[in-house]
Length: 273
Image (cartoon, rainbow, N blue to C red; front, side, top):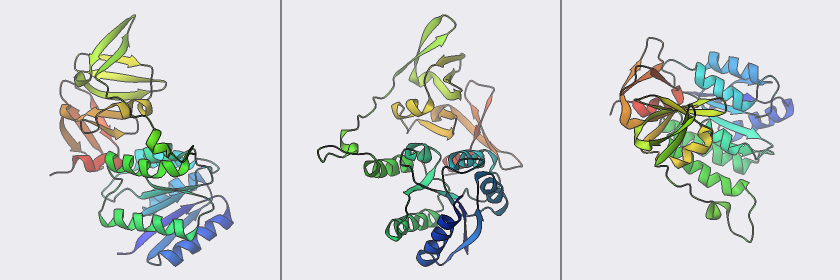
């Protein structure tokens, strides 16, 4: 089966350079479209459903990160979500990129040697039919990549000195004028709400002034699963996962009547064993 790719890059020369490099390094990959901005990238990806999407981050209309988020919300059907590679001149978006399920993060100017490693990674992921990879896979990629992006001192890598977040056992959340102590096991799911995170339990809801990005490293990823860019669920509270006629997946949770939507990026977490 022929694999297809889309390149989204607002600089025509850079887009052409990347296309020619891919043709040399991965001749079996067919280029379905080249998009000059983020809006076109979103539209073409939803129409053409490529296997791989190369996204510049800073583009007119929509950034590459915004395109990835919009695709996650709009994607449906049985076709696997595309492998996303961010190609950018900026190294300070790596964490944000991997939070959006990036397969790789490549800095410009792109060399053949670096692109060859990306191609091998993509081939492996596509062969394994991993639409977006799990959280463990993403964190592993981040740990492998970040030391190369973050400056080091005295020859010590950033990974070696990075503090390990302590596991959260108690959530201190605001309920009116009170601060409620919520055992982590009582949390059914966390939901991002602008500058706050809503902590949802079987008994009710409460707010904490933090972000999911800050919260995620403090949670046990074997128990708490990110199922959407704005939602983390307690897997022990998941009763069932239901796919509707449009292919969208929602979760029924213990003690809650509300349903939680699952992004296509995380649908693999609920495949039948």
